[in-house]
Image (cartoon, rainbow, N blue to C red; front, side):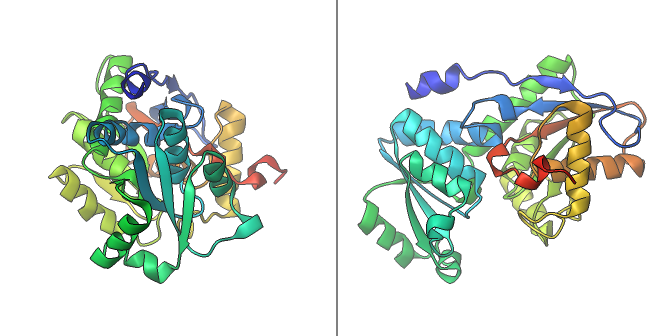
Length: 304
């Protein structure tokens, strides 16, 4: 069942987006619609989980355990994948139990059968300590551990497969590949899969995200990419009226729904760089829509 689920996974569309921005910019923009890969296990999370879950099944694990915050796309996708594929799932969640005020992400995870353990932010920072891990093993038994965001060596080949899809759909390698970066795993996968003809650009959604350059270089063994750390709009899951207005305008012109945590920030940054002339005129730019629409700000559906 697990092998069939991933082997029969759809190829996400590559959609040409004409004139999506407030002002024309001299590029050919395509969106790789990974938000359409699966209704629940979508976006980059589908790709990052693929080889991790195959490895977990190969090693005989029945329980998957991972980490995240209240709005984690990774926790959302892992809970859904676990239920679909017959794994028990455990989520170690940063912060206090919000009770009835739980985010839609955490409510969904519980509905999918994920067991949530809330820990303090201080304890969360020590989650790699031996004593912490021993306590988890004593409580939950044997488990396959995925890091926060799902970024590890098994995540990269699944993401890299998307690069090959893009080249087949275009009939050539794109000039640029662009993606939002949280833990840096999807950016690393694009770097690993890209041809020398393609420049890979990452847009950090974290305040102070410059450390991601070292993380991605460590994962890939190369520094042949660029990271732009200044389009975070205040930090992870933070937003501003300017960003929300940009997203509303993009959606009105294209019909493509976005969220403000990842893809909306990346597209804003892409547009700003295009206005500044970073892309050669006529360049083919492919931007990865990483899904996560369950985290969409309700304000986006309200009048500005």
